[in-house]
Length: 303
Image 1 (cartoon, rainbow, N blue to C red):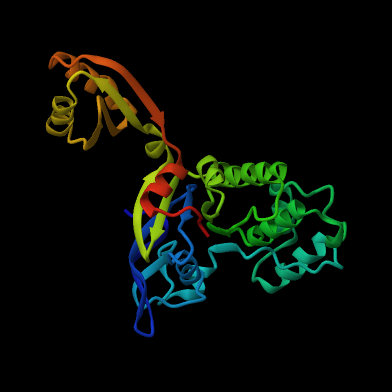
Image 2: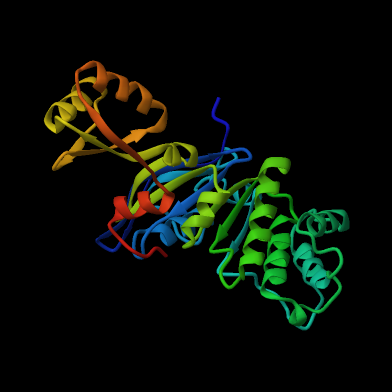
């Protein structure tokens, strides 16, 4: 049985004759946080717009809690809360009044729902202050409360930490992680702060030129490092890596470099030694999500 809260299946988008998105697929399980990354012009924003119903796929389908946005749009969207391009608030009203107004526009939202959302984002003490005295971080919390008042199963956050200071970023990250782990809310988050995605997310999908080029868990990414062996016989070492472990490598003088999962390193080192290779030095350079992103996209900025 498919337990995906969000399922994007073979989605393609054409605008006139131009292919913008091609065969994009990924999913999010209950209580999972997925980071969605892509360079400027990669198709990330178009994909997000299709998920929230602001654009229609040319082909493929998007399901939210089992409801297709093509066939059951209202039911699908009833399970979604989102912050796209920052919260839309009335500055001259209190945070609470802003939530009341939005709640009155959403079917079935009660005072209890509003109060619970306020508690979840930690705004109980300042909720009756006017929005125009709020810091950026407080406004983001109110925006998050807006997205939560109808108890969505999927939360979509587009650049949610824009404009926040380091303390605000940390606080927002912890709130999102709590929502996922304790409340079981699934979260799709896009951000240009790759280090934050690494700290916040369980998995990541990277899109470039309209295609998904990597779906991976953060654990898997961080467990794979660039290993450099300094050996007496680089050619033989390269052969063993390829033939016994299906690992590609490069040679520079007496150094052999390859990407290796940390759990395989001990086994590889033993095989090299048993094959008569003299290992003079081994360096394991841990990779970050940013390293992977830049390697895959050959870009230096994301948007």
